[in-house]
Image 1: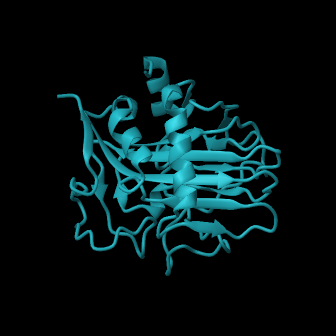
Image 2: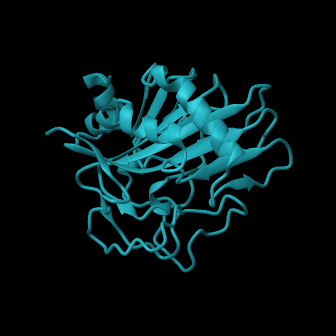
Image 3: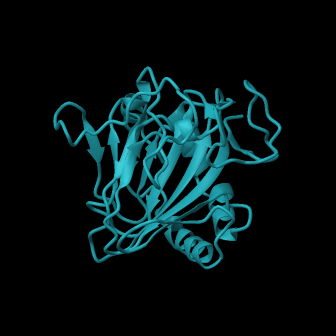
Length: 262
């Protein structure tokens, strides 16, 4: 499912691509995304674009049967635990992102970690395209999961600060402005392939200039050392009423442990 070399690459670079990791689950994922787009959840967003369409939605796995099957029955939990070098894999949330053909809006460079109320060295997101992708694939700054400071989280709508008040953030990087200064990883991908990346790994994506839609499903997992952390404002996703305190493991009735080495 995942080789020692792939685990080493994930630990070193903060991102790795596993060809065919979920090839048996492509049609299930496509059916789930179709249901999700037909029945958007409370957090669904039609991101402002001048051309095309950029749809995203998250935290739907308990109401989308195909997502729940994927989370509970696929080998993803074990792959996640092995990549994180964790004894357990605890599920965090799902996120669907669809860029229709001719949608030039890029996904800005960012880390997911600052938007979440989770911190730890053992985290992993799976990003799985449901259509062939070339230029619209995710791009990653290798090794950025080991940076001393987190990247400033911004609102995708207007590039303003996501949280109010001054924080000790690293400015949003632009590796394209100085080619060669940072190693950027990206892969041509087919349905069934999966990119695994740490919550702290800086990533972004170009717009979809092709004539093929880019449907992608991302599922996020946490390992043994992941803990709740207070952020300076409403997180994304917010999970209102969670009643957790800093330093606690995330409550398992909302965020179930779905794979354990024992």
